Image (cartoon, rainbow, N blue to C red; front, side, top):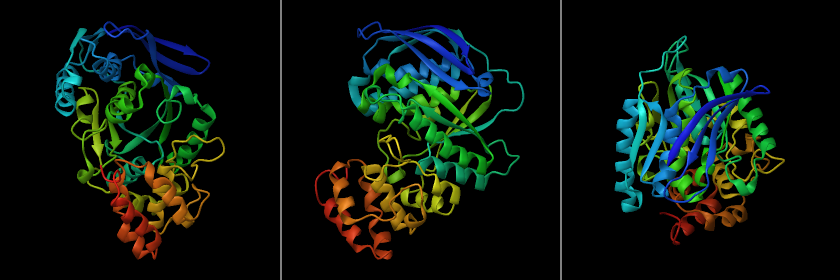
Length: 379
């Protein structure tokens, strides 16, 4: 794989940084990758070769390219830690993910920033990211460098990430509106970001299991003149951890001399996170978990992820007061309808059994217990 023609474009209040990608071994079509944002944040976009190297690494390994050659100087710390990333992937996935060679035009010195850098978070609006923001602000005072001051909301991940489903900009605009309410209450800058890096190899299993954590890191590196630390919310707790694209062992290795990456809250269960959100009114009313991207609602209320989150809110005694869902209860029929569709989410359901009983919802607890005895609930 060859990454070339790194450049910057500005037009109509938007700033975009781009690189051209050519495959050498697999015959996939060439593509221009970009990261884009709107004014006034365009001035913070850095044409940083590190981000394109990170964003291309896993598709190149997946397609069995022998090397990545990038026309740019790369942080020497990143070159070193990406060797650990590739070794870990080979340990997790075997010979299907053999390490490749990285050829850069040279190594670079750390970025010289104008002004003091600070900490950011990725804020999708889900349980994990809202918990990350809340706990950070409860722990770090206003003048601490680790206090989150920026939040990235990314188009090209769950919204606009699957090409056959379309770009769905109105759905993204609705997500921006919801997260703007959270950002205003928390005193943050909400930065909308647009990228097509996922489309470099648009396979669902690659994206979920191996790729999305690297693209989060790539987006953060695009703002490395503005931030020096980014927090990525955990998906799983320690008991549920396995090979996954965003992992406490892995995310830190996408950092550089300029950017520290912190994978946080892995000690918390999903239900504990829901409890934290239930006590933060603006987060509870703007919670966004749905992946269906329906045109008229923040959350569809019937997909597996919606129903799982709603059931957790029932267990926490908070669904009836949550306007982010039009539904104010979970019926047994609704829960049964989604249970066959789950896989690695099994532990998220099992932890709800006893709290549901304490809420007087034996009907829902029994459904989860019965499903736990069927193949596919706990992976």
